[in-house]
Length: 366
Image 1 (cartoon, rainbow, N blue to C red):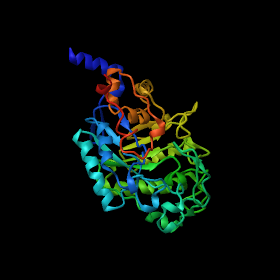
Image 2: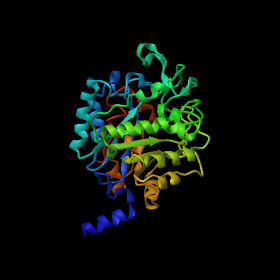
Image 3: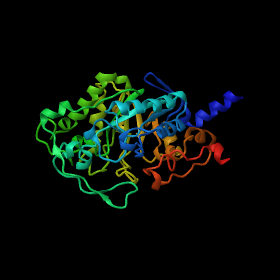
Image 4: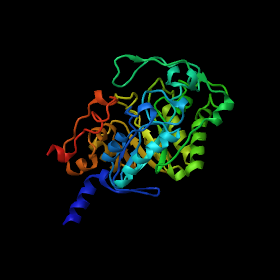
Protein backbone atom coordinates (compact mmCIF):
# COMPACT_ATOMS: atom_id res chain seq x y z
CA UNK A 1 0.00 0.00 0.00
CA UNK A 2 2.86 2.36 0.90
CA UNK A 3 4.46 1.85 -2.51
CA UNK A 4 1.20 2.80 -4.22
CA UNK A 5 0.93 5.98 -2.15
CA UNK A 6 4.57 6.86 -2.94
CA UNK A 7 3.99 6.32 -6.65
CA UNK A 8 0.87 8.48 -6.61
CA UNK A 9 2.72 11.20 -4.71
CA UNK A 10 5.57 11.24 -7.23
CA UNK A 11 3.14 11.26 -10.12
CA UNK A 12 1.38 14.34 -8.77
CA UNK A 13 4.49 16.07 -7.40
CA UNK A 14 7.48 16.06 -9.75
CA UNK A 15 9.45 18.09 -7.18
CA UNK A 16 9.69 15.01 -4.96
CA UNK A 17 11.04 12.66 -7.62
CA UNK A 18 14.69 11.56 -7.55
CA UNK A 19 17.23 12.86 -10.07
CA UNK A 20 20.77 11.89 -10.99
CA UNK A 21 22.97 14.98 -11.39
CA UNK A 22 26.23 13.63 -12.76
CA UNK A 23 27.66 11.45 -9.99
CA UNK A 24 25.25 12.86 -7.39
CA UNK A 25 22.03 11.01 -6.58
CA UNK A 26 19.43 13.59 -5.56
CA UNK A 27 16.39 12.40 -3.65
CA UNK A 28 14.24 15.35 -4.74
CA UNK A 29 14.31 18.29 -7.17
CA UNK A 30 14.37 21.15 -4.63
CA UNK A 31 17.58 23.19 -4.44
CA UNK A 32 18.53 25.61 -1.69
CA UNK A 33 20.16 28.44 -3.67
CA UNK A 34 22.77 30.98 -2.55
CA UNK A 35 21.39 33.62 -0.17
CA UNK A 36 23.62 36.30 1.33
CA UNK A 37 23.02 36.47 5.09
CA UNK A 38 25.98 38.62 6.30
CA UNK A 39 26.67 36.67 9.48
CA UNK A 40 30.31 35.72 8.86
CA UNK A 41 32.09 38.08 11.25
CA UNK A 42 35.21 39.58 9.64
CA UNK A 43 34.57 37.36 6.58
CA UNK A 44 35.11 34.16 8.58
CA UNK A 45 32.30 31.52 8.49
CA UNK A 46 30.88 30.98 11.99
CA UNK A 47 29.62 27.95 13.96
CA UNK A 48 26.03 29.21 13.63
CA UNK A 49 26.31 28.65 9.86
CA UNK A 50 26.73 24.92 10.53
CA UNK A 51 23.40 24.96 12.36
CA UNK A 52 21.71 27.00 9.61
CA UNK A 53 22.84 24.80 6.71
CA UNK A 54 22.37 21.47 8.51
CA UNK A 55 18.81 22.49 9.45
CA UNK A 56 18.05 22.74 5.72
CA UNK A 57 20.00 19.65 4.65
CA UNK A 58 18.22 16.48 3.56
CA UNK A 59 19.58 13.17 2.39
CA UNK A 60 20.27 13.62 -1.31
CA UNK A 61 19.32 17.31 -1.24
CA UNK A 62 21.44 19.97 -2.96
CA UNK A 63 22.50 23.09 -1.05
CA UNK A 64 24.47 25.93 -2.66
CA UNK A 65 26.13 28.19 -0.11
CA UNK A 66 25.76 31.92 0.15
CA UNK A 67 28.12 33.82 -2.15
CA UNK A 68 31.66 33.31 -0.85
CA UNK A 69 34.40 35.79 -1.66
CA UNK A 70 37.50 34.44 -3.44
CA UNK A 71 39.95 37.19 -2.51
CA UNK A 72 40.26 40.21 -0.27
CA UNK A 73 39.74 42.45 -3.30
CA UNK A 74 36.52 40.59 -4.16
CA UNK A 75 34.62 41.95 -1.13
CA UNK A 76 31.79 44.46 -1.32
CA UNK A 77 29.56 43.76 1.68
CA UNK A 78 30.08 43.51 5.42
CA UNK A 79 30.48 40.08 7.06
CA UNK A 80 30.16 37.93 3.93
CA UNK A 81 32.18 34.68 4.08
CA UNK A 82 35.47 34.28 2.29
CA UNK A 83 37.55 31.34 1.16
CA UNK A 84 40.90 32.99 0.43
CA UNK A 85 42.65 32.35 3.76
CA UNK A 86 43.59 29.20 5.67
CA UNK A 87 41.46 30.37 8.62
CA UNK A 88 38.39 30.68 6.39
CA UNK A 89 38.98 27.29 4.78
CA UNK A 90 39.23 25.67 8.22
CA UNK A 91 36.06 27.47 9.36
CA UNK A 92 34.09 26.04 6.41
CA UNK A 93 35.01 22.43 7.22
CA UNK A 94 32.59 21.87 10.16
CA UNK A 95 29.80 23.48 8.10
CA UNK A 96 30.40 21.06 5.22
CA UNK A 97 30.65 18.17 7.71
CA UNK A 98 27.31 19.14 9.28
CA UNK A 99 25.57 18.99 5.88
CA UNK A 100 27.25 15.70 4.99
CA UNK A 101 26.17 14.23 8.35
CA UNK A 102 22.56 14.69 7.18
CA UNK A 103 23.37 13.05 3.81
CA UNK A 104 23.24 16.39 1.99
CA UNK A 105 25.29 17.67 -0.95
CA UNK A 106 26.86 21.11 -0.64
CA UNK A 107 28.39 23.31 -3.35
CA UNK A 108 30.20 26.57 -2.61
CA UNK A 109 29.25 29.60 -4.67
CA UNK A 110 32.46 31.55 -5.39
CA UNK A 111 32.14 35.29 -5.88
CA UNK A 112 33.93 38.48 -6.84
CA UNK A 113 31.81 41.63 -6.66
CA UNK A 114 33.90 43.68 -9.11
CA UNK A 115 32.80 47.32 -9.06
CA UNK A 116 30.03 46.72 -6.48
CA UNK A 117 32.46 47.71 -3.75
CA UNK A 118 34.09 50.65 -1.99
CA UNK A 119 37.62 51.68 -1.04
CA UNK A 120 37.05 50.52 2.56
CA UNK A 121 36.69 46.88 1.45
CA UNK A 122 39.71 46.95 -0.86
CA UNK A 123 43.30 46.11 0.15
CA UNK A 124 45.18 49.35 0.89
CA UNK A 125 42.09 51.36 -0.02
CA UNK A 126 42.62 50.76 -3.74
CA UNK A 127 39.92 51.13 -6.39
CA UNK A 128 37.61 48.14 -7.03
CA UNK A 129 38.21 46.41 -10.35
CA UNK A 130 35.78 45.88 -13.22
CA UNK A 131 35.40 45.61 -16.99
CA UNK A 132 34.85 49.38 -16.98
CA UNK A 133 35.90 52.53 -15.17
CA UNK A 134 32.30 53.77 -15.02
CA UNK A 135 31.05 54.17 -11.46
CA UNK A 136 28.01 52.24 -10.25
CA UNK A 137 25.27 54.64 -9.23
CA UNK A 138 23.94 54.44 -5.62
CA UNK A 139 21.61 51.46 -5.07
CA UNK A 140 18.97 50.54 -2.51
CA UNK A 141 20.12 47.32 -0.83
CA UNK A 142 17.97 44.74 0.96
CA UNK A 143 16.90 45.89 4.43
CA UNK A 144 18.70 49.23 4.04
CA UNK A 145 16.98 52.60 4.41
CA UNK A 146 19.77 54.57 2.73
CA UNK A 147 21.20 54.16 -0.75
CA UNK A 148 24.45 52.20 -0.88
CA UNK A 149 27.25 54.14 -2.55
CA UNK A 150 30.15 52.63 -4.48
CA UNK A 151 33.66 53.82 -5.26
CA UNK A 152 34.81 54.51 -8.84
CA UNK A 153 36.29 51.28 -10.27
CA UNK A 154 39.52 50.67 -12.13
CA UNK A 155 39.26 49.04 -15.52
CA UNK A 156 41.22 45.77 -15.52
CA UNK A 157 44.12 45.81 -17.97
CA UNK A 158 43.94 43.17 -20.66
CA UNK A 159 47.09 41.45 -19.37
CA UNK A 160 45.65 41.25 -15.82
CA UNK A 161 42.50 39.34 -16.73
CA UNK A 162 43.98 35.82 -17.14
CA UNK A 163 45.63 36.19 -13.69
CA UNK A 164 42.37 36.78 -11.81
CA UNK A 165 42.20 34.30 -8.90
CA UNK A 166 39.20 32.01 -8.70
CA UNK A 167 40.21 29.60 -5.96
CA UNK A 168 38.49 26.53 -4.58
CA UNK A 169 38.79 24.16 -1.66
CA UNK A 170 36.65 21.47 0.01
CA UNK A 171 32.91 21.03 -0.71
CA UNK A 172 31.27 18.61 -3.14
CA UNK A 173 31.57 21.17 -5.90
CA UNK A 174 31.62 24.84 -6.85
CA UNK A 175 29.09 27.22 -8.36
CA UNK A 176 30.71 30.19 -10.10
CA UNK A 177 28.72 33.39 -9.54
CA UNK A 178 28.20 34.88 -12.99
CA UNK A 179 24.97 36.72 -12.20
CA UNK A 180 23.41 39.87 -10.71
CA UNK A 181 25.82 42.54 -11.82
CA UNK A 182 28.97 41.20 -10.18
CA UNK A 183 32.38 40.83 -11.84
CA UNK A 184 31.65 38.21 -14.53
CA UNK A 185 28.31 39.86 -15.33
CA UNK A 186 30.13 43.21 -15.64
CA UNK A 187 32.04 41.69 -18.54
CA UNK A 188 29.10 39.86 -20.16
CA UNK A 189 26.52 42.68 -20.17
CA UNK A 190 26.78 45.39 -22.81
CA UNK A 191 25.19 48.04 -20.58
CA UNK A 192 28.37 47.85 -18.47
CA UNK A 193 31.18 46.53 -20.64
CA UNK A 194 32.59 49.36 -22.78
CA UNK A 195 35.93 47.73 -23.59
CA UNK A 196 37.54 47.78 -27.04
CA UNK A 197 39.99 44.90 -26.51
CA UNK A 198 39.37 41.13 -26.87
CA UNK A 199 37.15 41.23 -23.74
CA UNK A 200 34.70 43.80 -25.09
CA UNK A 201 32.50 44.68 -28.05
CA UNK A 202 31.07 41.50 -29.58
CA UNK A 203 29.01 38.97 -27.62
CA UNK A 204 31.82 36.42 -27.95
CA UNK A 205 34.36 38.87 -26.57
CA UNK A 206 32.17 39.94 -23.65
CA UNK A 207 31.65 36.30 -22.65
CA UNK A 208 35.34 35.40 -23.02
CA UNK A 209 36.33 36.13 -19.39
CA UNK A 210 33.44 34.16 -17.87
CA UNK A 211 34.24 31.15 -20.05
CA UNK A 212 37.94 31.37 -19.20
CA UNK A 213 37.00 31.26 -15.51
CA UNK A 214 34.74 28.23 -16.12
CA UNK A 215 37.57 26.46 -17.94
CA UNK A 216 40.10 27.27 -15.21
CA UNK A 217 37.88 26.03 -12.37
CA UNK A 218 36.89 22.91 -14.35
CA UNK A 219 40.55 22.13 -15.00
CA UNK A 220 41.32 22.59 -11.32
CA UNK A 221 38.59 20.42 -9.75
CA UNK A 222 36.91 18.56 -12.63
CA UNK A 223 34.04 19.75 -14.80
CA UNK A 224 31.73 17.23 -13.10
CA UNK A 225 31.90 19.36 -9.93
CA UNK A 226 31.31 22.78 -11.49
CA UNK A 227 28.14 24.84 -11.97
CA UNK A 228 27.60 28.40 -13.19
CA UNK A 229 24.88 30.85 -12.19
CA UNK A 230 23.68 33.37 -14.78
CA UNK A 231 21.02 36.09 -14.89
CA UNK A 232 20.93 37.30 -18.51
CA UNK A 233 17.67 39.22 -18.03
CA UNK A 234 18.45 40.89 -14.70
CA UNK A 235 19.10 44.63 -14.35
CA UNK A 236 20.38 44.25 -10.79
CA UNK A 237 23.27 46.69 -10.08
CA UNK A 238 22.65 48.32 -13.49
CA UNK A 239 23.55 45.08 -15.30
CA UNK A 240 21.17 45.24 -18.24
CA UNK A 241 21.87 43.87 -21.71
CA UNK A 242 20.45 44.85 -25.10
CA UNK A 243 19.81 41.21 -26.10
CA UNK A 244 19.59 38.99 -23.00
CA UNK A 245 18.17 35.99 -24.89
CA UNK A 246 21.13 35.93 -27.27
CA UNK A 247 23.49 36.27 -24.30
CA UNK A 248 21.82 33.42 -22.40
CA UNK A 249 21.75 31.07 -25.40
CA UNK A 250 25.37 31.83 -26.32
CA UNK A 251 26.55 31.08 -22.80
CA UNK A 252 24.43 27.91 -22.53
CA UNK A 253 25.81 26.59 -25.85
CA UNK A 254 29.39 27.58 -24.99
CA UNK A 255 29.28 25.80 -21.63
CA UNK A 256 28.68 22.49 -23.39
CA UNK A 257 32.28 22.59 -24.63
CA UNK A 258 33.53 22.34 -21.05
CA UNK A 259 31.07 19.66 -19.94
CA UNK A 260 30.24 21.31 -16.62
CA UNK A 261 27.71 19.73 -14.29
CA UNK A 262 24.96 22.35 -14.28
CA UNK A 263 23.76 25.76 -15.38
CA UNK A 264 21.71 27.72 -12.83
CA UNK A 265 19.66 30.52 -14.42
CA UNK A 266 17.50 33.25 -12.94
CA UNK A 267 14.05 33.69 -14.50
CA UNK A 268 13.39 36.73 -16.74
CA UNK A 269 10.62 37.86 -14.36
CA UNK A 270 13.26 38.59 -11.69
CA UNK A 271 14.80 41.66 -13.33
CA UNK A 272 15.45 43.10 -9.88
CA UNK A 273 16.53 41.35 -6.68
CA UNK A 274 13.21 41.41 -4.81
CA UNK A 275 10.58 42.22 -7.42
CA UNK A 276 8.86 39.98 -9.95
CA UNK A 277 7.72 41.36 -13.33
CA UNK A 278 5.28 40.11 -15.94
CA UNK A 279 7.18 39.03 -19.05
CA UNK A 280 6.78 36.96 -22.20
CA UNK A 281 10.48 36.03 -22.15
CA UNK A 282 11.50 32.53 -21.13
CA UNK A 283 14.53 30.43 -20.21
CA UNK A 284 13.36 27.68 -22.57
CA UNK A 285 15.88 28.53 -25.34
CA UNK A 286 18.72 28.19 -22.80
CA UNK A 287 17.23 25.00 -21.40
CA UNK A 288 17.21 23.51 -24.90
CA UNK A 289 20.75 24.70 -25.64
CA UNK A 290 22.45 23.40 -22.49
CA UNK A 291 23.28 19.68 -22.36
CA UNK A 292 23.87 19.31 -18.59
CA UNK A 293 21.58 19.71 -15.58
CA UNK A 294 19.48 22.87 -15.75
CA UNK A 295 18.38 24.68 -12.58
CA UNK A 296 15.85 27.52 -12.57
CA UNK A 297 15.44 30.16 -9.87
CA UNK A 298 13.37 33.25 -9.27
CA UNK A 299 9.99 33.61 -7.59
CA UNK A 300 9.01 29.93 -7.63
CA UNK A 301 6.34 28.39 -5.42
CA UNK A 302 5.36 24.72 -5.18
CA UNK A 303 2.78 24.74 -8.01
CA UNK A 304 5.04 26.76 -10.28
CA UNK A 305 7.96 24.41 -9.64
CA UNK A 306 5.93 21.26 -10.28
CA UNK A 307 4.62 22.76 -13.51
CA UNK A 308 8.11 23.67 -14.74
CA UNK A 309 9.28 20.09 -14.13
CA UNK A 310 6.17 18.51 -15.64
CA UNK A 311 6.67 20.58 -18.80
CA UNK A 312 10.38 19.64 -18.90
CA UNK A 313 11.45 23.29 -18.66
CA UNK A 314 14.03 22.39 -16.03
CA UNK A 315 15.63 19.53 -14.10
CA UNK A 316 15.77 21.18 -10.68
CA UNK A 317 14.07 24.17 -9.03
CA UNK A 318 15.67 26.57 -6.55
CA UNK A 319 13.54 27.97 -3.72
CA UNK A 320 15.21 30.84 -1.89
CA UNK A 321 12.89 32.60 0.51
CA UNK A 322 10.82 29.44 1.08
CA UNK A 323 13.95 27.54 2.18
CA UNK A 324 15.07 30.46 4.29
CA UNK A 325 11.91 30.43 6.42
CA UNK A 326 11.04 26.71 6.16
CA UNK A 327 14.10 24.61 7.03
CA UNK A 328 12.13 21.40 6.39
CA UNK A 329 10.75 22.57 3.05
CA UNK A 330 10.76 19.17 1.23
CA UNK A 331 8.76 17.66 4.09
CA UNK A 332 6.23 20.51 3.94
CA UNK A 333 5.82 19.92 0.21
CA UNK A 334 5.32 16.21 0.80
CA UNK A 335 2.71 16.71 3.52
CA UNK A 336 1.08 19.71 1.84
CA UNK A 337 1.76 21.60 5.07
CA UNK A 338 1.52 25.39 5.47
CA UNK A 339 4.61 27.56 5.06
CA UNK A 340 6.19 29.96 7.52
CA UNK A 341 6.41 33.46 6.05
CA UNK A 342 9.89 34.93 5.72
CA UNK A 343 10.75 38.16 7.51
CA UNK A 344 12.69 40.36 5.12
CA UNK A 345 13.83 42.73 7.88
CA UNK A 346 15.97 39.95 9.42
CA UNK A 347 17.61 38.68 6.20
CA UNK A 348 20.96 40.29 7.02
CA UNK A 349 20.48 41.02 10.70
CA UNK A 350 23.84 40.64 12.52
CA UNK A 351 22.45 38.02 14.88
CA UNK A 352 23.45 34.33 14.98
CA UNK A 353 19.89 33.17 15.76
CA UNK A 354 17.13 35.69 14.98
CA UNK A 355 15.89 35.36 11.39
CA UNK A 356 18.54 32.70 10.80
CA UNK A 357 18.28 29.50 12.82
CA UNK A 358 15.03 30.24 14.71
CA UNK A 359 12.54 29.51 11.91
CA UNK A 360 10.34 26.64 13.14
CA UNK A 361 10.19 23.05 11.94
CA UNK A 362 6.77 21.45 11.40
CA UNK A 363 6.93 19.57 14.69
CA UNK A 364 7.52 22.87 16.51
CA UNK A 365 4.26 24.28 15.16
CA UNK A 366 2.10 21.21 15.82
